Length: 179
Image 1 (tube, helix red, strand yellow):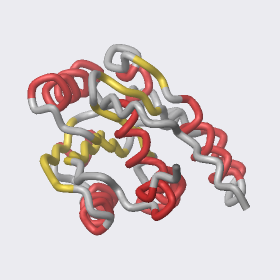
Image 2 (cartoon, rainbow, N blue to C red):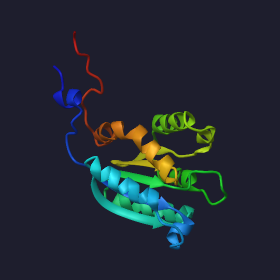
Image 3 (cartoon, helix red, strand yellow):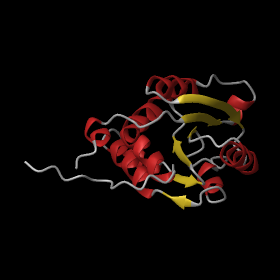
Image 4 (cartoon, rainbow, N blue to C red):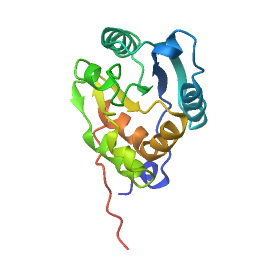
């Protein structure tokens, strides 16, 4: 039997989301958070329900604390981070994920880097990760507006399905449709 939801691509429910921007300058009010603003608008436009937004400094403990709060206490379904995925000494987002993720989802990060490499060789320098904690999906995007937009476009088509699976949907992932 064909699962109509899967064939049509229609999500089975609305999911909550939060955006966290990791930026020392943004936290101090010295830089406008254009990538965070874009992500909030794009995810709302894609049918997700806004549940939170924070700008935190590039500080390992601050990042871990806000992610624990949003996953463990608030139960937010999707958390998209922007910033802190590069190579500068203060870029510690990937290291923070080692203290947050219960399960890594390497294919999402690989897909984002692959798509970025089609646009610039600098795409290979991104250290963004994706993973889950409890029933929450966490995806790290670069801090620049252009790169955040391009990377979100790559993962957006699979986010609903990933959330369904993380939250316990037992249905098969693929359906064979006879000709």
